[in-house]
Image (cartoon, rainbow, N blue to C red; front, side, top):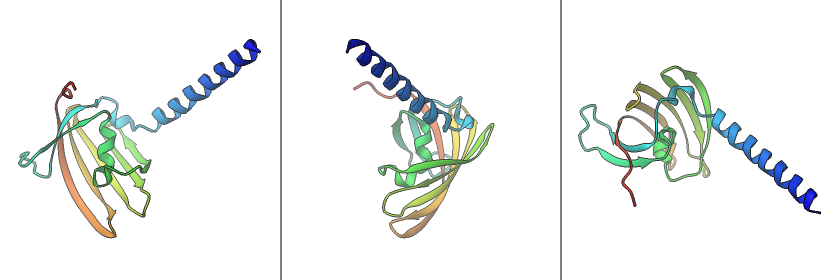
Amino acid sequence: MIRRLSQSLVLAGTAAFAVLALAAAHRPAALSNVSGGLWEISMSAAGRNATKVCLADPLALAQYEHRTASCTRKVISDKPSEAVIHYDCPGGGFGDTKMTVLTPRSMRVETQGISDNAPFNYVLQVRRVGDCPAR
């Protein structure tokens, strides 16, 4: 009985690791040198009216318009410093986003799609300004 339970736990652990590895494989290589932290997000190249957001993974910026939704993402193109991601959200929202990594602390995010039955199209200038504040 204990041996069977032990084998089940090993198999479950292996399956969980495989799922995690598969999820990690879908992260664009373009973002490999970009880390989570406190990011400043602005629609102005000069950084005016910036919003600060703590992100565990900057890939979340790919669906900035739908940041509160649980969307599925698919990497369409992945170059050394640029990734194009398509995402679909429950309720019909979707988008296409081009993330251009300028430096590991600076990106340009061009996004367009449909949100609340209306089109959107804008460019974000984002830069990492530090670590997230401790809670």
